Amino acid sequence: MTMFGVLILCLHISGTYIERLSLPPGPIGVPLLGFLPFLGSQPHKDIAKLSDKYGPLFTLQLGVHNTVIVNAWESAKDTLLNDCLLDRPKESPFTLTDDSISFMDDSGQVWREHRKFAQQTFRDIGFGRECMEDKVVNEIAYLTALIDETDGRAFDLQTLLTPSVSNNVSQLAFGHRMDFNDPERVFLDALIDRASPLLSLLGVLAVSPLWLKSHQKTMDTNNKRDYIDGFLHEMEKRRQTDPNTSFTVKKCSSNARAFFGAGSETTRTAVVWTVLLATKHKDLQKRLHQEIDGVIGRDRSPRWADRLDMPYTQAFICEVFRWKPAVPLSLMRRASEDTYILGHFIPKDSRVLVNIWAVHHDHKLYQNPELFNPDRFLTNDGKNLIKTEALIPFSMGKRNCVGETLARVEVFLYLVSLLQRYTISAENEELLSLEDVFGLTLQPKESVILRFAKRL
Ligand code: HEM
Image (cartoon, rainbow, N blue to C red; front, side, top):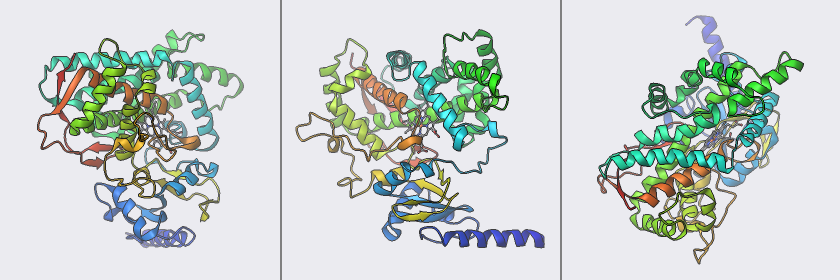
C-alpha cells in the first residue's frame, strides 16, 4: 500500500472513532470491520444480547459504518415514527445510477413520490380488495393440486411454495403468473433461494425488457392491469410537463424488481414458519383444524373475511410473526437531519437499525418471550384477539412495509387452506428443527421435509 493509501486509511479509521463521540456509546470493534467479526450466524440475537450491557440504544460499528442499534420497543417506536429517520443510507453497493435503484433504497422527495404512487396504483389494481384475494386463492389451488399428487409422501415444502408465493407478487407487479416449470420461473426461484442479496443486482432479469415492451404495446390507459401499466401511464403524463421526471423506464424496472425481491422470499418465509410450527405442535394444529372446520367447513375455499371469526388462527399467526419475524433486522435508516431518539442525540447522516427480533423478545412486553405460545394474544376466554402496537413484523410508521396488506392476506390464506385440506406431519418428528439462520430473512436452518395427508 502506498503512503497515500495508508494516510487515507488512518484518516478513515480516526474519522470513525471521532464520529462515535457524538453517538450513543457502545462496544468498540476492530478497525475497518468494527463488530462484524464478533457476530455469528444469528446476528439479531447477538445484537439483542448486547443490550444487557449497553441498554436498548447503542452504537455498533458494522463494517466501516457506525450504526445506532435500536433494541427495544419504546426506542423502536420513537425511531420509526420520527420523520427525520425515514431516509436510507446513501451508499448502496448495487447503486450504478440514480434510477438503477428502486424506491426501496431511495430517500427524500424521489422516495416519497414513488412510494405514494406505488400505494395508489396497488389500490387501483385491487390491493386489499376481493380481486386480489381471488388471485391468491387461485394460486393456492395450483399449489394444493400439486401437493395432492404427492399422495402423502414427504417432500420439501419450499420447492413448491417458492414459485407459488412469488406468483402473487408477479401478478401485482407484472400482471401475470408463471407456470412452476417455466424456465424463467425456475431461474427466479433459484435466485430467491440462493442469492437473495444479489437479487437486486441480478433480478434485473425479473423485469425483462420484453415484458416492458409488451406492456407498452398492449396498454389501455383506462384499465391498469398491474404496476407496470400504471407506471408507464404515469411516466407519459409526467414527461409532458417535466422532462427530468424520476419516472423513467429504468426506474419502472427497478421498482417492479424490488416488489418481486421484497415480496417473495419474505412472504414464503412467513408461510413456512406457520406451517412448521403447526407441524411441530400437534396440539396447536388440532386447535387450528377445529377452528377451521367450525368456521369454514370443508366445502368452500377460505376467505380473508373468515379471519374475523377465527381468533385462535389469528393469535397463532401473530405469535409466528413475533417468534420468527421474517425480517429480524429491519432495513437500514439514515437521519436526514440532526435528531433525537428517546433524548439521545443522533447527528445528521447517522445510520439507524431497528432490531425487530429484539423488540419481539423484550421481557418487558412478553412473559417468557422465548416460548412459542399463541394464547398470549388471546383474551382469557379465548374469544378475542389481543392486539398490540408492539408487534412490528412489517415495521411501522411512514416507511413501513408497502406490501403488508398482501402479505397478511397471503399468510392467512395459505395456512388456513393447507390445514383445511391436510394433516401435516414431519418425515421425522424427532428431527424436525425450528432452528433459524439469518440471511436477509430468517430462514429455517434445515430443509422443510413434510407429509401432507388429505383430510377432505
Ligand atoms: C411476511 C412478509 C413480509 C414482511 C415480514 C415484510 C417486512 C418488511 C420490513 C420489515 C420492511 C422494512 C420497513 C422499514 O424500513 O422500516 C419492508 C419494506 C418493504 N417491503 Fe415488505 N415485508 C413482507 C412482504 C412484502 C410484500 C408482499 C411486498 C410487495 C408487494 C413488500 C414490499 C416491500 C417494499 C417495497 C419495502 C420498502 C418500503 C420503503 O422503503 O418505502 N414486502 N418489508
